[in-house]
View 1: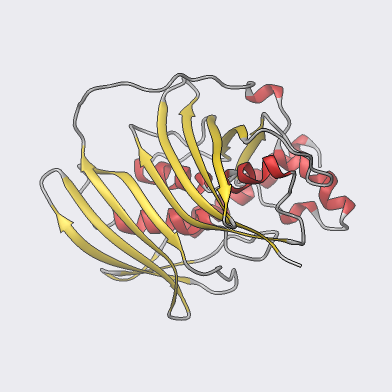
View 2 (view 1 turned 90 degrees about the vertical axis):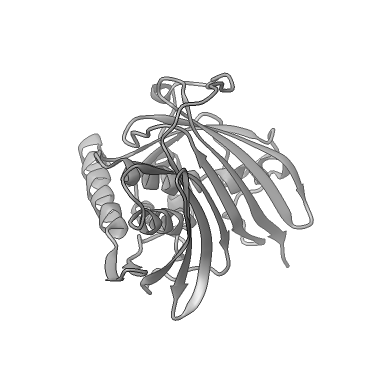
Amino acid sequence: MNPEQFAEKKQRDFAALLGVLDLERISESHYRGHNMPTAWHRVYGGQVLAQALYAAHLSVGPEFQVHSQHAYFLRPGRIDVDIDLHLEIVRDGRGFCTRRVTACQNDRPILISSLSFQRTENGLDYQAPFRPIAQPDQVQTEHERLIEYFQTKGLDPDQRTVEIEYRNTTPFDHIEPKPMAAHAGVWMRASGKVDSPILNQALLAYMSDSFLLDTSLLPHGLSYFNPKLQSASLDHALWFYGQVQAHQWHYYELDCPRTGSGRGVNLGKIYNKDGILVATAAQECLMRLVD
């Protein structure tokens, strides 16, 4: 795929993602969303996180911005079935609003998410140092890297959509992985620009579900393509700080402090291109070897 074709694919896939986030309103407490295609034929967890965030935001005033989201993934989602998002208004306060969203397919919940919105205010200001391993122009796109893997397996690399561009500063071998330190750094950006603040946050939520599980696998020398590995995201938490411009480069600093009992816990810090921490993430994943 030449650069012009790759740019066209990014635009096409990003337009598809915006369509997925453009929820259909069934009632004041019920919305419906479509699905992005995936190479693994299951709904990408970040998609449902973003849809739940966007649905919850539709019920709060413009003076409130989402500051945290907590979610549990209950079942794998099917990409051929629309997702119904049921919204519950838990509390409306002067400084904070709380919402709960249940995402369902065929009347069965696949995700539950609690979200808190805060009225903008100033406070004590500090952040962790920004130390990227490399700059985005110094590393290859993940789509380019994975073409080799897909071709080796006789698969079509264009099954992988590029609505988000990822560049891993600590790339690992999906074909013959070797144990590595449980630390990674990934540059990421949306393949198009939007103006809406909440849509930019939804796009960041969408991106945030990537590479967390991978980080748990690094010390074990395993790829999530391993047929003996049963893996999935179990839960996900996000905390937002300030405005987000999802089309600009963001650096995702990832660490896995522990794996055990068939699970791994992962922590992430998301910095914008100016080195400002705009979000933090935490996720526990399932990583079970089966015969």
